[in-house]
Amino acid sequence: MSNSHPPYGEQPDPNVTPWSGPPAPPAGYPAYGQPGQAPQYGQAPQYGQAPQFGVPVPPQKSNRGLVIGLIIGAVVLILALCGAGIGLALVGNDDEPDPTPTPSATANQGSGTEPSSSPQPSEPPSEQPNNNNNAVTARYSSDLSSVCDGSPILNAATYSGPATAKAYVFSNNPERPTFWSSKIVGSDKRYYAKSADFTTVSVVGCMSMVPGSEGAPKKCDYKASDGKNVSVSYISSRYQLTFYAAKTAEKIGDGGVVNAPATRCPSFISYNKTTMKAYAAPDSGTIEAALDKFLS
Image (cartoon, rainbow, N blue to C red; front, side, top):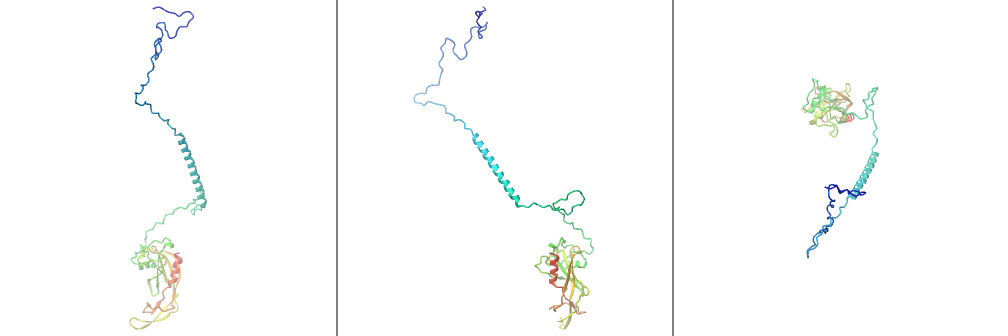
């Protein structure tokens, strides 16, 4: 091996090393001194056949503009709906009056806390058991007259106020102090109750004759059942009307004085055969007027 050195003053070839031969030609090109080969292309189409070309691919369209337009339209629509809703809310608030706070009835003075302005719900009063030994259970409407003797009716309706109460009225007289006769009121009255609906009654009116209120007797002539003619003293008077709660027999109000006029002899009369006296019945119109006032 001989060492070859470049002539003095020349730069050595970087592609040539001292131990290698001349530099190799670059890959992909023909070596120097050799003719290059012509590049090969696709074969020419045969006669009678159309040349085949590649199908051109259309450029992909961008949807960016469409998406931006839809977003802008949606934003405008939302803003329009919000504006309409705010306008309707403002108009609706103008029609409603502002609530006025009311002081609570249960305010505790000096407690240092402000009373609540909203009404507090109250629980309905619980019904206490009746420990009255004289309490009875009514089987008929006439049994409610026991209230006038001080006996509560266990199966009567509870009195919760005059606005919804149903009522019966009874009266007696000196000739029959322990017998209470029912007084009929108009069926068109709100407080009217049928005899079969006695358990719906919560108010009982009791009328007792005012002592010393008897008027001068009126003579009424009748023919007795045995055919004899009899003369009966028909007496006017005044009655005191008092209202009681049917379920407890407790007094709940006064109905005032009810007159029992005896200006006319009735066509039918019930009288005492011993005293030959009969007492006029209390005026029905005055009874209804008292009920209208108390149960209104």
